[in-house]
Length: 325
Image (tube, rainbow, N blue to C red):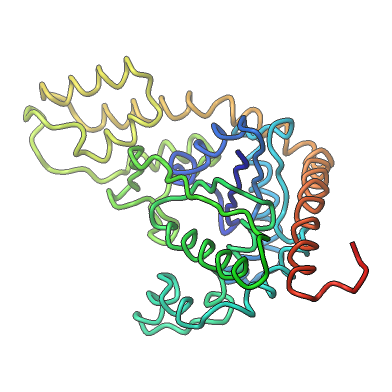
């Protein structure tokens, strides 16, 4: 099984990124092959400051390594280091129906809100398809909201194979476990766009203050509460041990506690849960040459695989030179 996934460097990673996706990516790295890339070309649709994008990209690499992505078991690289993907995107674009892209959610939603959408956003699903097909990926872990992009990828692969022969491996989506609900500090889905995040590596004291300011309901302290429906408990359950989780759930159901008590327990559990990753991040951040080596080695492996796929596609559609192999 060859796993492929990418993550955009559009800001510092938060708990939603980790528990909703990154944690599960890392668990999959022990499959036959795992390719993970930092999608800085995709990020250009939203990040237009070059220094900011470079900073976010470097932070993303360091964060992923600190969180447990192992270069001995997974290939980590920058999307922009693989020019073969951009060329493959053009080959796919030449056979992509406009109507297919017009039906894609990101473009439709932006237009529905009366916002301008550029060609990058419109063609985003095709670049994503090239990302997947370039590495002969057969398994693509995604959230349910990204399933449409995998379907577009499969449609484009089927169409290309129909016209030019058996060129592309047919990928399948692996829907990420949605049971790890990650609410923001306001109870809504954790998202940078909602400004309600808890960053993975922000200063522990600053995060503790943010946790202590989390909005809670106004029910009396003595009233029993169902823990699973409370966003404070949902956050706590992500970073607590099984025993701590059970003890906290029992406290909720019996009542007679204050939310300040839960917030303190949440802050303590979070600091403990991410302590090892935080220490590991400091080591990687202090060794930028080592990070560059990992990305360079990953790009070399990825370019070899993508180059072979591009040669196959170019020969099939007629853009390769006669006699080239």
